[in-house]
Amino acid sequence: MKERHLQRRILADRLFRGLIIVLAFICMLPMFLILFFIIKNGISVINWGFLVSLPKPMGEAGGGISNALAGSAILVFIASLISIPFGILAGIYLSEYRKARFAYLSRLSVEILQGIPSIVIGIIAYIWIVLPMGSFSALSGGVALGIMMLPVIVMSTEETLKLIPDPLKEASLALGVPYPRTILKVILPAGLSGIGTGVILGIARIGGETAPLLFTAFGSPFMSLDIFKPVNSLPQLVFNYATSPYPEWHTLAWGASFVLVVFILSLNILAKMVTRKWKVQF
Amino acid sequence: MNPTDEVRTGKQRMPAPAQARSGALPAKETTRVRSGAAYGSRTVLSEPVFRRILYLSGISLLLLLSAVFVSLFIASVPAMKHHGFGFLIGMVWDPVAGKFGALPFLAGTLLTSFLALLISLVFSLAVSIFLGEYFRTGIMSSSIKTVVELLAGIPSVIYGFWGLFFFVPAVRWVELQIGVLPYGVGILTSALILSIMIIPYSASLGREVIGLVPGDLKEAAFSLGATRFEVIRKIILPYARSGILAGVLLSLGRALGETMAVTMVIGNSNMLPKSIFSPANTMASIIANEFSEATGKIYLASLTEIALVLFVVTAVINIAGKIIIIKMSVER
Image 1 (cartoon, rainbow over the protein chains, first blue to last red):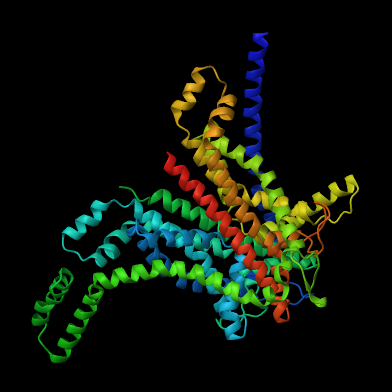
Image 2: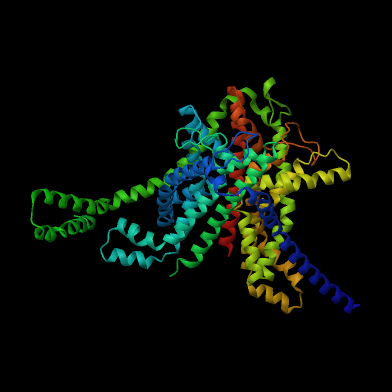
């Protein structure tokens, strides 16, 4: 009797262990399936012409994604321009004034900002920029993406700077270096790798965003480098082609997905490598 | 004279000997002085000014958040005036007839999110236990960890695209087998996609809290003859309960606001969903579908009001999750 009870417990233990291992491995499946689908369907259209030519109207063969690449670059550039300096300063504030009441509220704001659904941020950029200016524009899309990128930069800056030991700052101050220079020339460079990782992850986060661009950057079939005009972007091109009824466009969308996924996954892996190699250590 | 000024004058004095050596042409002198000033200009940023800049950028985060809320609120005032409180329980969404009821979208959002949560909970718990208890280090653990983390990086539009070609046919096949209308798209399909998308969020937090369970607690249980399964069930999971809950809340926040993937596979029907197989719309997907084509003040304002609701709900959920995490770290 007792023997059997023991055996049952051991069996339950083994079964559970097996179940956990199987379920954990199932979680890896979607990643491989997604990559498989993208590579199988998208690799055939990838060539130099695909990257440098404009989309063609339905019915014409070929066509590329050059305007979407340029548009994405503009959008990411505007977003970075807004969020990186602002985010780093705010991150310094949060790490320097850890106990201040305002710092607590600011930190909470960052966390809420990070959780705002991307589509809501699109509406915000629409209200703030598209409505007053009267047209969809790359600028509004860039602002929307900038708001999405900001929390990533702030948090990574704060987390990194918190790791830097106080004696480093005290040593600098004791040598007579004024406070602003201590922060900008001693503390910030010491945390550069962490902040860099944050920037990379921020770009990876916004590079694939579509929802905030639907009614800000809007998309366009032409090449446009004017920040006051609508621009196309890579994720939006994927969305438009993927939801179209034409198989030819689906193929283009797979190709564009391939480019997008390679871009974003390599940014993620790069961020991991930066953290591993130049980890802030003291 | 404060220390900052002293250093500044020190910096400005330094170039002087060089000036003297290079032959004091008046023109050159002015450039020297100017470049000296430019060099000094970084230190001109005095401490009070610098601190004020930091302070301002900290406050502006709060301002940004308030501005987001206030603009959404103001922009949805016309809709609030027009519909009153009936908006959220109105069953019919027919912009052409001027009828705006958001209940179908509320239902769609809640159904997809909670279904997704249910599906993903099994898997994210398994990953958390796998990484936090069974395989803390080693190639197996690091590969699963990396892959699951990378899942969070895949853009949602790609999830949607993949879902269209993978889950939609699969769900359609299931629907044919059990004899319901084979749309393929619908609530179940969206929930499946969402469940994959939110695994990384709850898994990473779950792994952390399971890894934090004190070793002596576990060893005490082992020494009393408990099997590993019993230790996990009776020691680890109860101990890590609040952290797991926080992870679930964070992933719920993600699921509620997820837009593109859902928009692509939910079928975009503005009717109240009848079952988990019927096409529907979520709050996020109705905005994505109709906002850029919305004509008329009330129409736009109604969509903005949906966005406002979405914003408030996700904010509350995120704050609740954070409070649990903070409480947890205080208890330890």
